[in-house]
Length: 180
Image 1 (cartoon, rainbow, N blue to C red):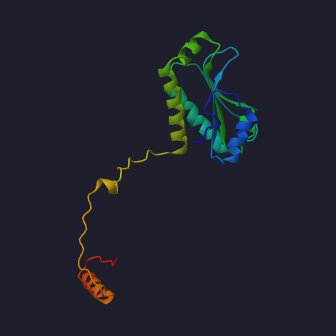
Image 2: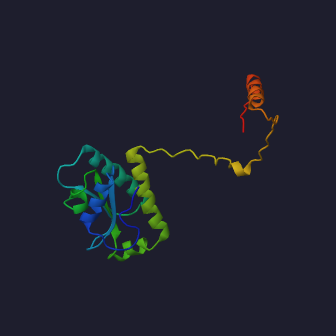
Image 3: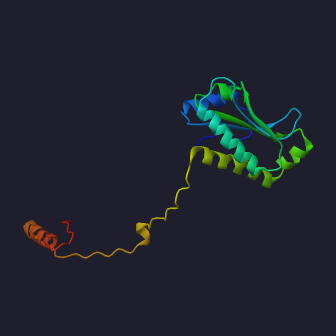
């Protein structure tokens, strides 16, 4: 997963699409808050030719978001000629998550719990659309520094042939042996 930005600054829509294209992303999702009079949630895909996968992803992700933010007006699954949808080279979706200029929607958008529901809906939609599975937690590997190590030395020789002979004898008996 990559972000086009992680702070609150404007980035041209074409630049966002270019970032996704450069990364050769498998999927692009652009998360927005709407304005201009209205209420509720809607999602968009490009209004030109799109793959069947793009439509399928929109259906699944839209449904999961609506499930997560229950009680919000569903404005529907739409199509538009937005730059982030038109210029991306992979399936793309734009979500409009309520209206900032609607008092009721704006109050919800100020609620941390509601924002978590919006995020959860997006995550669940992506998980379901792509058939992702939760990775099993890996047990942390024991660090060598956490283990006590004990060494056994067998023999000290002036003649290297004697050292080699003992090493071979130990190996024949199943013991690892090295000459240092």
